[in-house]
Length: 197
Figure: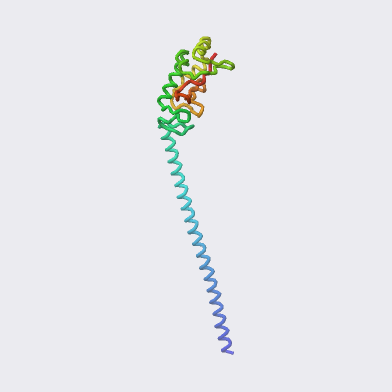
């Protein structure tokens, strides 16, 4: 009997130790899982912070580059700089285009139709149903016309620098004059005039 009790006690102790061991195992496993999760969260947070920092740096660099391009004279419509500023519609360099535009602007503002007549690509539409076939027809029509006060004021404010350009031409003011390149001779011309009364 004593032997049976000893064996039973030994078995009970083994069960208890096993149970305790399993509990320790569970505790150890839970602690390990918790530590791993915490480490994973810390790593993920650190990675997210690094990514955010990298994106912020890239955005700042991009904004600085855009500011630099604007300072250099970048046309937002064509994305070009320097001499190629107006390449969306002409092969002429920036200075040539802007000098031509300033001459056209001055002639328009001052009512110097003779100078303007020599800058036009004919035929040119001047009003609904009115087309000038050559500089004589243009001069004849313009002798009875003048630029409206509002259009004159707007063109006086035109700097002829970094003008809006698209494939069809370059805009002065809000469209009082458009200039473009003739494909036949690669020269700049006034291709549209408005704001007359």
